[in-house]
Every structure is written in structure tokens, then in C-alpha cells.
Picture 1 (cartoon, helix red, strand yellow):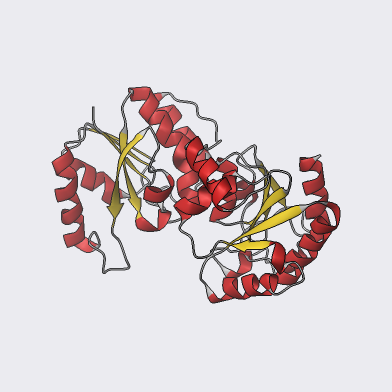
Picture 2 (tube, rainbow, N blue to C red):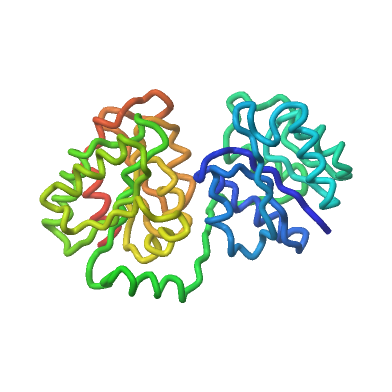
Length: 319
């Protein structure tokens, strides 16, 4: 049996969130699945060794200039899918376009979210309801990324990770400026931790100018000598480093999702997005801005993240 799963959201975090649902379909039909994903999801790097996924097809859509954009792009994608001769397709969106593509690709069994229902769609509950109604599966939302033990050990040796220290991942990047907690707050937190624990910090961020400024501020602080920057590494090389950490403290970013999926206790700094993105996994411990009872889009709370609250939560987890 050949099964295609469409998960066309663009983020790494989105891909991690949908992993349990992808794996559940594979287990249900006792076969590895093929996933249609966007390149920006980094799925090929993160899940290359996943035992439930056979292959990734990259959806090339780039604001009108991608291989699969527009009418011609639709037929390009149909041509690709026809070659696989899929028996079933599971579409984790409400797009009429993907329904039509499925039918024109000759896929007989099409399972999809209700059409035209994208507005205010809950990212996790919609997926749960979809699999319950379509194939009677009930899924827990707790993604788990497996890494080879030899890779974890090799990485530990390569970076001289000492298990007598508290190795802490600081995910200081973020997909938008409102998600990036300022460097002065992170540095104050690091000082609190350093005063109470023998520790080492791994700084995970991207190449965005603002992220690089935050990284530079930290590296040039009094604790810079205790830091290892990871910005020149690929995601696949960072994963085993995270796995060697005792705890992670991350902005609402790809690194919070990856860390929790690696089963590392992860404190998530929720500044500007719904809380569901920071508490769907049992390994996530969200911190919201001072003065807020809930967090949502446009909370704009990055300046109100309290380093003392983060430190108390860290002590609670490490005790």
C-alpha cells in the first residue's frame, strides 16, 4: 500500500507538531508513508531516520515563482504524484486545490480536512478530529524525535560536553521580531543560573541580523566564555547537541519544538503567540509575560518576560 501525507505548513515547529499524526497513519496501515512538505520545514534533515517515513517530496511554492505554483505548477505536481501510484492520501488542510490534485493524480481514497474551514482552525485539535473521523484513530500530541545513540555519544565527545555540568540550550532566535526576548533579559537569566549552578550554555539562533545582535550581546557579556554558539551548524548537527543538554530555555521558535520532541525539559518563553504552541508536549513548560493571564497573537510581551520566573521554573525542573 502506498500512502501520501500532505503537511504543507512552512515551519519546523509545524512539522514537529504533526509528527505523531504522520506516525499514527503509518502504524495504522503498517507501511512507511511518503510526505509532501515544504523545504522550509527542514523535514529531510530532522526526520531522515524516522522509521515510519519512506520519503519526502518537496512542495516547491515560492510566491508565484515555484515549480508547483499556479496552474502550470499544479499540473507539474500532478505529474510527479502520478508516478508514485498512491492508494491513499491524507491532506492536513482544507484546500480545494489539493483535493483536485489528488483526484487528477489518480488517488482513489482521499482523506482531508473539511473544505473551506481554514479560518480559526486549531492546529492540534483539527488534526485529532480529522483522524478520529476519517480512520477512527485517537492520537496524543507528544512528538518524539529519535536519534541514534552512537551519534549522541559522538557529539558529546566532539563538543566536550561534561555531564557533571548543567548543559543548557538557549534558543534565542525566533521566526519574528516579536518572539525574540531581548538580550539583556537573557543575560540576567544566565547570571542567575551561573550563580547557582555549574553550567554551560549552547546558543541556538539563525542568521537574521537581529538574532545575530542578540547572539553577539551574549557572547560579549561576562558569561561569553561559558557559551557555545550553534548558528553555523545545520539543524541535523544541532539535534544531538540538544539531546545532550539537561534543559532548554527557548523563545517560541523551532528550537522549543525540537527540544521538547527530543524529550528534553523545555521552558518556552511565550511572548506573542497562542499558548498551544508552548504547552502541547509534556516536556514543555511555558512562561508568559508579567501582567498577562493568557498569551496570543499581538500580545507583544517580549519585554515583560521575567528572568526570575524562568529561573524558578528551571530550579523546579532540575531539583
